[in-house]
Length: 73
Image 1 (cartoon, rainbow, N blue to C red):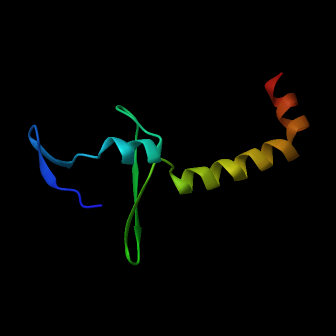
Image 2: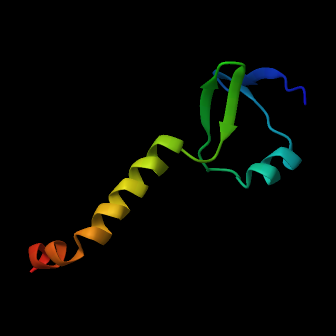
């Protein structure tokens, strides 16, 4: 898919077609992340680093549930 870089107000941007927005499951106001890869750039609605950190946090919260309950008192 070829996209054109264009002027958007005082900035420069790329307009994404509706079908691509649907595939990414994003709309106006949502955030996208550009991840640099060896062969280009991946556009994704998910911050992979944040997701990894959240998985670690959820694991700790499961393992330390009783401690967290005591701290919350």
